[in-house]
Image 1 (tube, one colour):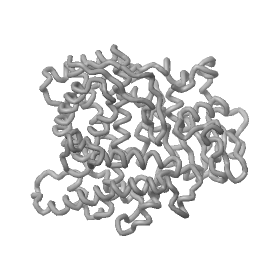
Image 2 (cartoon, helix red, strand yellow):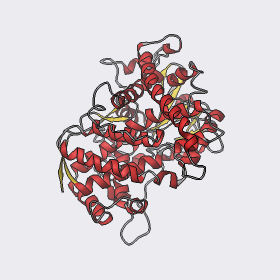
Image 3 (cartoon, one colour):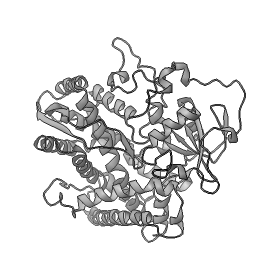
Image 4 (cartoon, one colour):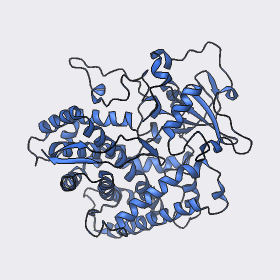
Length: 499
């Protein structure tokens, strides 16, 4: 795990405090690793040669924090500065610079090129790589439906049915790798949301290597695993198709093929939808005059890319921590027994509202194993961070994953303690935790558009799993690899048995 038991464990809470006694320093004075002419610090990420590793961004971040302090400047590619931000007070300042503007970030640039080269299918890069007014026009239309609570809770019944089936699958496959099974579960739920379509990715046919389910899961992983190197390495793919860019294109072509087919099928069936009947999310999008077919295909492809792996990995870590912490698991079981008195009781929106310990488990999981190392932004104005002037236009990346494991912000930071997120008995106040430390879904207008559905799905899975099953960890200690989201670096080996 993170190398926390070094310098910073020997210091008290004042170690994370900042005092500017010397005035504001210039951008060029921000400390950080020094690059070489032409290649920047990219050589430091080469296997067997460099100090850093693109697949271990959290370890890179901790190393830089310990060596250079709470603000670090680095030119991975010469002339393209990135500033790594660790202090929550500075992170707050980064997001304040977004106020009144369209938040911008520098990511998924190869995906943007792929879509720009296919105008017959896409109008723009879609929600992930697009910036500015063009991004906001898309975002505001897609979030209209997703921001309505009823549109989220409408999926509870079908989701609960899938969860109950998944519990049975886990019980039968007692100690197999849960990670691959979770990928199929969340693909199943994603199809309900994105395409109004029920599929069974656990069927004999869909478990085959050449099935749609298997190929979609593989395509999402291949694109995600290519993004970081394409974004941060030499961008030769802008001029010719490099092997890694070809890999991304092939994966995107398959997701795109499925999105075009299923969105097209729904368009054909829209004439059968009654005017006053409740509309699904996809139907609302197709009936929205501000969105066209190309916008919706891009959105569907983005969902296939962003929603399968993120929820799978986060839920994997939640189960990992619960399987290793019997006390927390039993507390969660006690809550589920109150909320679902009988095993056959249905989960409802009221159930989820009252699941306070379940929410604390998820929050603590996001603290210890967030979706990504942090959040990227392109500054839209000059900002002072930790006493340094950071220029407008600079790419900054918050380092929440590292800060959430520092003892100056959390007591026993390496311990899984959901109780730290609960109100103290007899009080109305929650523990004092800086609001910019744990940001698993990003922040502000550019935060995860499907956050409510992701949280709802995770809550429902934990409720069902703990109500029906007792589970025990059978694997080794897990860390993460960056792909660029955080993936468990080993199998999810859990033994399940019926309670």
